[in-house]
Length: 300
Image (cartoon, rainbow, N blue to C red; front, top):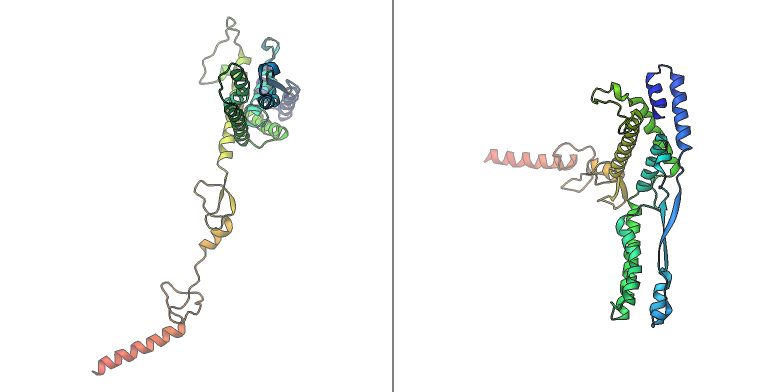
C-alpha cells in the first residue's frame, strides 16, 4: 500500500499530482490508529485481620489502587496495513518523547509498585518496627514522585497539534528524498516471497527510520537551548551557544569602553585617546611644569 503513494510520487512530474498524493497519504495516515491512553494499576487489598495496628492499616489503604497511564499500543499486527505501522511509530514516539503522562521511566514504575511489595513483606513479618515500615512507604512514594517529575521535565514541550505539524514537515522531506529500492545505488535488493518481504517493507523501514532520525535531531537541537543565569546580573537567559555567560544587556555594556577620568583632577575625559591618563587642562599644566624643570636644568 505504501508503494502506491511513494512510487507514484517518485515517478510523477506533475506538481499537482504530487500534492494530491501527499495530501491523500496524510489523510489516510491521520485516520489510522488513534492516539489513545489507557490505565493500569498496582493493586492489593488491605486485610484488617492480618494487620493488628490500625495506624499501619491506614498507612497502606491509600495505596491499594495506584493507577498510572499507558499508551494503548497493543494491536493485532496481522490485521494492520503498513500505513498503520507508520502511524503506530508516530504514536509511540510522541508518547516516549512528548507525553508527560506515559513512558516515565522504569525506575518510576518500579518504585510505584514497590509499596505493594512492602505491604506483603509487612504481613510476612519482615519488619520489626512500625516506624520502619512507615518510613519505607513514605520514602518509596516520595522517590516515585521525584522520578516522575524528573521524567516529565525531560519531555519535549510539544502539543499533539504541534507534533502533527512537525510530522507533516518530516513527511515532506521523506517523500522528496524517496528512491525506490530497486533503483537505490547502495541496496542490492530482490523480492523474497519466502520471508514475506516486499517493497512495502522497505518503504516502511525507510519512513520509520527517517521519522526517528528527524525527531532525534530535533531533540538534539532543542537541548542546545538551556536556561542559565547571567554571571553579571543573575537574569535568566536562554543560551544559543554553550559558552554564553551574559544576557544581551550586560553583553552590550561589557562591549562599551569604560568611563575614563583624569588621574590628576578626576574629571571625566570625553573621547579619550589610547593610553590617555590626564584631561587637557592637567596635561597642559604638566607640560608647563616639565618645561620649567627642563629649562632649569639647562641653565645649570
